[in-house]
Amino acid sequence: MAQILSPDATIADIVTKLDDPKEYLRAVFSNMHECTKKFGSARVYIGLSGEGKRPHYRIEPDRNRTVQISDAAFRDAILGRGKPNRADREDLEYMTSFTTAYNGSSHKTLKTEGGIGRNNWSNRSMTVEEIQELRESLDGKRRPI
Image (cartoon, rainbow, N blue to C red; front, side, top):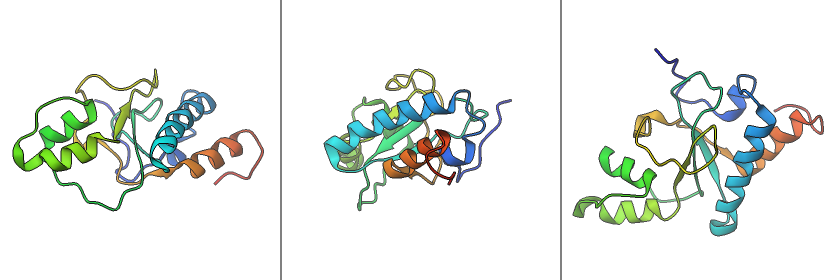
């Protein structure tokens, strides 16, 4: 059975478990940069299943709106598909306008449902700036955070 990471895990918490920390952080940073260009900010949440060697991750901008949608609509939002029911439509449209999940190995957009349920994501995130600081600490440019 796959190990489950702590519900409040961030990339900083598992950086020593990553197969290739520098490459993983480079790719995450690159994907976060795209979100930042479009929305002005970005946060990354990691998937909780597995051992933390190449966790999937979800990127979205900072937002001040709480989104409450069904679990099925959440999965569809992450995958960018589906037809929401009327009650979920507004929140789903809001969420899909900026939330993207990525495969932790290829760093390409996730296209399958496996493991993307609402409870499979960390409840803590990291900002672009925090990811950059972590990258620099691995390169010896800064003290580790």
